[in-house]
Length: 463
Image (cartoon, rainbow, N blue to C red; front, side, top):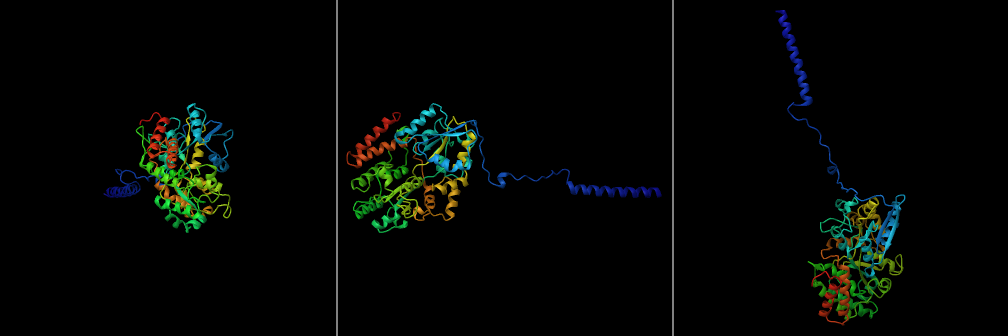
């Protein structure tokens, strides 16, 4: 009996021990049928926004970086900015091939080089003919040099749309957005218009009828010594950007209603002698920035640094016309120009080209640096916003923050009428507009001659 009691006691103790063991195990591991819970790793996209970079898919063993351009602007940018921050890789040199735009020389020489598969890494495209190249095999998608569209998310959308091919693939990237403003001489406005502050002058150029009347006042008050604008050609740079249709649709020439309206405006300005008759890029046109023969110019962002500052006759307020200019929106929003970096299929410097494109068109900090140094309007919205928020002022424009003005216009840019035919057809139009405006031929004759000239230049088009 005593043995049975001892045995029973041992069983009870053993059961208690097993209960404790099982209880501890349950607290540690949970139910055996319940899946073990593990902590989910935090993805990079959850922690912070990432930018996907494409893989470089062109050769990277070149010893000569070949760049084609129509002027030395980008060469100066490379020398004054990129190369100071990023010396070239050992054994690599840059070769510049620069041909002027006049007479189509740049495109002609570029076409020959591309079609001949000559060694080209980067070539520059202007707004008037960018689309001509992006829809050919002479440009490659930027993803081939490691630039994804996601990386371009801070650019103004229209600058990406301009260089999309027919499949929607971006084949170029621009360092600038090019909204335009009307620039006027502060002192001349006070002298001949009786007002000088931007808000008051904007009221005198708020629409085209008012603009023409203001031009009449300037001519009258100055005795014809000062004209409100250099030429009717300058106005076409504004009007052409608001056309509803491209020049060519379904292989046919389309003449937008804006064209006929502009022709009549040009005739009024010419017949009443309301312009200085200085053709764009002529010596007189450039010189007008620094003398009193012209009160106002239509200029995009690049025009300030490349034309106005270089021709004003000074480098600080009080010298020449430096500091005597102001900017307003003018009669309507517009854009003028723009430059894109495109990559040739013969590129053999993939990593270097990738780095250059990122430096000038992707990286906010380097773009901001270039923006402040050049006074250009860079194609990076956060960079522009930071500059505006800093209280920036520009002494050339009497302390105005021109970036804030350009920022208001930039979202209004519509490039839907842009085509690869623009440069040539615009030139042909202005030849006939000039004849009509000067009274040499009728409007109907001008339009008929224009159509014939276009079909002669582009025989593949239908009437």
